[in-house]
Each structure stands twice: as structure tokens, then as C-alpha cells.
Length: 314
Ligand SMILES: C[S@@+](CC[C@H](N)C(=O)[O-])C[C@H]1O[C@@H](n2cnc3c(N)ncnc32)[C@H](O)[C@@H]1O
Image 1 (cartoon, rainbow, N blue to C red):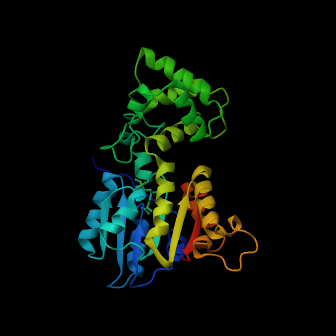
Image 2 (image 1 turned 180 degrees about the vertical axis):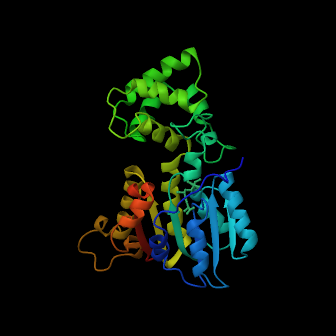
Image 3 (image 1 turned 30 degrees about the horizontal axis):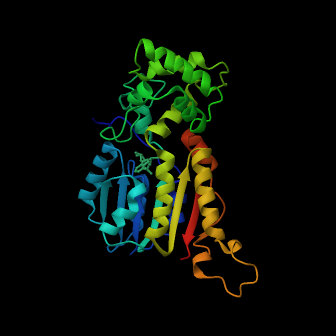
């Protein structure tokens, strides 16, 4: 597997690294290394005593990360989900000592653009969609075995597809005759089952998004990753998260809001002091950040990006 033909243009590069407020001697985590766009800029800002730990599930991202680690002794990369960044911090003895954590969510352009990875409804390839093709269940295996109502739920909940039920029925009818093994074949069946094509959008887009999110447990990992990040940061440490669709952003927004509000409202009103355990754990930094005009022009993928920043209070 090689992807030297596929590039990833980093979204909100300067804004995200600025949001981390990098300290020269700090320890940082890039939970979504990808092709290392953010990581390289973080390393530029770090001094000789600074450290950066990268995570990615994807073997090609890890290969790029290992090449970077060979050049720069301040950087290490691990093939692990950022959902497990707390466990990684414990093993490395840095729990509660990390100065900043970045999550740039979702898939990279090389994953989407290389038909062999099986994410693309535009270019035919094996129906896989796993960020790490060595673990878990491929899209083909899931489609072959999932119940019709489970398929419908995934298309509706994770793809926000209005015609999820019809599409699930079409998929189940077709798989009884012949299993799905290729992305173009699945895209074709979904396209025919979709009665309302939207202008400028492939009729299989939402369904493919839903299947991808399900196969990679993206929302479950995000929830675990946010909780783990809060424990792993030091007081004053920054959490920076870039989301690419409303399902992700809702989880990030609600998590940050909840932690910034604390739980004092669960206490009796006349309590003279608020116990520490009920005080806020995060402070929101600024408003949500969107790509500026120049980036929107240069990189259409940045159109859906929204970045939120918070700082750990306790
Ligand atoms: C949008 S790209 C990141 C791009 C990166 N910031 C850059 O500038 O090159 C997302 C990356 O995160 C990885 N990824 C997504 N979810 C992950 C998770 N739960 N744990 C680890 N890596 C994940 C994907 O494999 C992909 O390489």
C-alpha cells in the first residue's frame, strides 16, 4: 500500500496551532496525525525540550509519522485511536501533564481519494472504508450481515439521510442476489433508491458518510477522546478540535459547554461554597473558528470545518 500520489491539504493550519498556544518546552498530542501538517508546525514552535506525540489509526499516516520521527527526536507516533490517548498517557507517565491536544477529525484526502481504500463513491474500489484496514469489520462485511433496520438507522443517524429506509431495503434486496464488494456497485444501488437527488451532491453521499462513521466508530471514539483529553491535559492546557459535520460538532460543542458550565446547578441554591467537584473544568476560548476566504478558495474541504478551543481549569 502506498499513497505518494495523494496529498492532504491541512485545514485551519495556523488557526489550530495558534489555538494550542504552543509553549517551547510543552508536551503536545496530535490525535489525528494524517500527513502531519499540524504536527510539523507544532514542531517548528517547540524548543529542544518540547515533545509531540502523534496518533493515527491509518497505516499510511503512521508510515509518514515514522519518517518524521526518524528526522526529529522530539516526535513519536503511535498507531492507536485517540480514544485511547488517556491509556497512552498513563503508559508514558504524562497523565495530567500535557499542554495541548489537537483533534482534526474525520478522514484525510488520501483516504478519500485513493479508490483502493474503499471510501469513494466516485471512483470504484474494494468496499472497505476502514481507517485501519487490519482491524474491525469492513464496510462490505457489515453490509453483508447487518439487519435492514440497523442499516437504515446508520444511514439516518450518521448520514442524516432522509431516505434511509428505502435505501436499506434496496441494499438488503440486492445483497440476497449478489453480495456487495465494490464501492461503485453500492453507490449505484443507493443512487437508484434515492428519489430526491440534491443539486451538486452525489445521491450516495450521505449514505456513504453514515457507513464510514459506523465502520470506524467515529462518534464513539470522539466521545471517549474528549473525556480522555480532559484527564490528560495539565491545568492551563488547551484542547483544540476541528469538526467537519454537524454530528461531530454537536458532540464537541455540548462537551465543552457542559464542562465550562460545571454542575453547580445540581446543588441546593443556598450553599455558601461550591464544592470543587461541581466547579467548571474547562473555559471556552473565543468563538467557533471557520476557514477564512483565502482558505475557502484554495481548499473546498475547509468549507465544512469548524474549530472549537477550550482550556483546562482543573
Ligand atoms: C483530517 S485528517 C488529519 C490531517 C492532519 N491534521 C494533517 O494536517 O495532515 C484525519 C486523520 O485522523 C485519523 N483518525 C480519524 N479518527 C481517528 C481516531 N479515532 N484515532 C486516530 N486517528 C484517527 C485518520 O486516519 C486521518 O489520517
